[in-house]
Amino acid sequence: MDSARVSYFFQFLSTILVLVTFPSVLPKTLASGFSVKEATVKDLQLAFKRNQLTSRQLVEFYLNQIKIQNPILKGVLEVNPDALAQADKADRERKIKAPGSLSGLHGIPILVKDNIATKDKLNTTAGSFALLGSVVPRDAGVVTKLRKAGAIILGKATLSEWSHQRSSNAPNGWNARGGQGKNPYTLDDPCGSSSGSAISVAANLVTVSIGTETDGSILCPSSANSAVGIKPTVGLTSRAGVVPISPRQDSVGPICRTVSDAAYVLETIAGIDTYDNATIEASKYIPKGGYAQFLKKDGLRGKRLGVVRLYYNFGNDTFLHETFKLRLKTLSVPSENIALNFEFKLALNAYLKDLVASPVKSLADVIAFNNKHSKLEELGKYGQDHMLEAEKTNGIGKVEKQALLNMTRWSQNGFEKLMKRNKLDAVVTPFASFSGILAIGGYPGVIVPAGYEKGMPFGFCFGGLKGSEPKLIEIAYSFEQATLIRKPPPLRKLEV
Image (tube, rainbow, N blue to C red):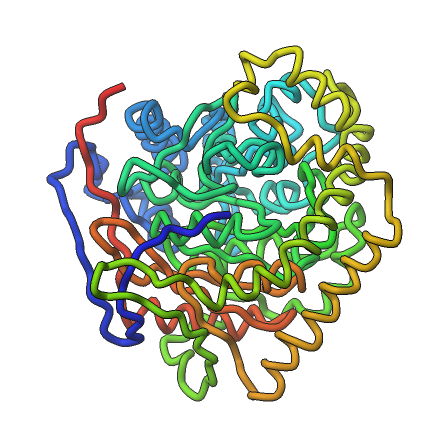
C-alpha cells in the first residue's frame, strides 16, 4: 500500500508538529459530565464503575457520530442493528457480576473490518456486491474472542475492496458498496486497506477497531490517520473467518487511539483457534499475564533500536526518495506478487467454498460477477487486474516455489541476521515503509503517531522478530507517553 509522502525531520525526541484545531461542533459530553471523545478503554471502564456512563449511552453516542460524520468520511459500512441490545445486556451484566470479574473490553463498542465474518445480521463482503447476502458458517475466530470478552460489535468498517486485491487502479479506501473513504484530517487518502478501521477510530466514531494486514494494511492507515496499529506476528491472532489473501502473510490486529487500548485488544484476540492451525504454533509467543503488563513508561530504557535511514531534499520539501524502501522493493516485490497471486486464488476459493450460501463460489465467479455488474462495481474505472492475474495461476509450480524460497532466504539472511548480529530489540522506520519486510517474514510491527506535516499525520513504526510484541509494546508505549502527539482531527462543517 502507498504510504503518505510527506517530509519531516526524523528527530526522536523533538518532533516538530503542525497542529490545526477547530472549535467543536459535535457533542462531547453526556449529562453526567463525562466526555466520550478520545476516551480510552480504561476511561470508559472507570466511567461505567462510577455510574457516569452506560454501554447504551456509549453506543448511542457513537451511532450519532456515525450519522453525522460518516456520510462524508465513509469509515463505517454497516451498523449492527443489535448493537443497542448488546449494550443493554452489558449494562445488566455489570450490575449483577462481581467487581473485577468482567473483561476490560466488556461493554466496549468495536468495529471490525468488513472482511471479518460475523454470524449475525451484518454482512461480510470485503466491500464487494459479489458477497452481499452471503452467509458465513460462524463468527471469525477473533470475533468469537471479542464476544466472549463481552465486547459490543458495533458494525463493519469500510476497506479497500477485497483488501486491495481486486485492482491496482482503485484508490486506497474505495469499495463499491461504501464508496470512497476519507482521511478525517485531510479529507483525502486514508491509506488502506484497513482504511475504515483507522478512519473511524481517528474520528471518534468508535472506541477501538479491528483491521487486517497482508502488507501494510494496518500499519499504513494507522500512520495516515494518527492512530496506533498493531500488526501481530502471523498466527498470533486467528485468521479463520477472514476473507483471505495469503495465509502466509495475513494477520489480524487492533487499530486504536492509544497503545494501551491496542494492547488490551491484542491480549483479548490472541490465542489458539482450532480453525487456524497457525495459531497453535504461534501461541508459544503469548506471554503469561497478557500484553497490558508491558505498558511501561520507561519501556525505552535499555532498548537497542536500529534506525532505518531515509534521505530527504529539504530544499523543495519532498523526498529524494524512500531509498531504502525502494531498494528492498526491488528485491521483494516480484517474489511477493508471484506468491500472493497463487495464494489468493487458492485461499479465496477455499473461503468461498466454506460459506453456507453465496452468490459466488470461486475467484472465477467473482470476476464474472464484476463483468456482469460492471457499472455497480465501477469496473470500467478501476478494472480487476489483480484478480485476473491471480486467476491465471495454477497451483504451486517451480516459479512459485522459487518465489517462496526467495522470501524465506531474504527474511532469514536479511532481517533476522540484521536483528541478531546487531543485538537489536527493534527497528524504527517512518510511516509503513518497512511493511514489506515485516510482511514477507510474518514479523510484527507497532505504529504510533509521531507528528503532522501540514495537517497530515504520520507515524513511527517499530518492527521486530516473531513474538517480539512485548518489547514492541514497551517501546511504543514509552514513545507515546514521552511525546503525547496524537490530536483528534479538525472538525469541519460536513456537507454531503
